[in-house]
Figure 1 (cartoon, rainbow, N blue to C red):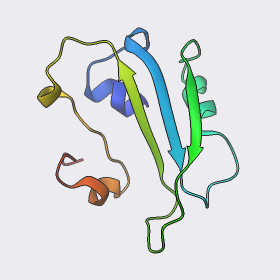
Figure 2: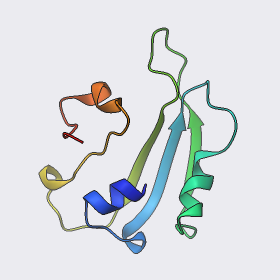
Figure 3: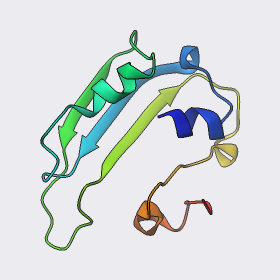
Length: 95
């Protein structure tokens, strides 16, 4: 979440809500706990499990943040870390 905020010049107050998903192999903690740990504690968050597709990339947490912004959609920076850019190379930027 910190990378999403930083790359888009956002602050925690810009965030309205967050949806997080995790691949089925991740079972140790709720992804929302990591978001709360960086200080985003006053917005609704929900965690869900990704469908278990054969051959899918393991150990992936996905985040979709709803934000307040006047920025045009084509100026939003989509953040893919640790090799996950292959999941959406059409919108992922070089890291």
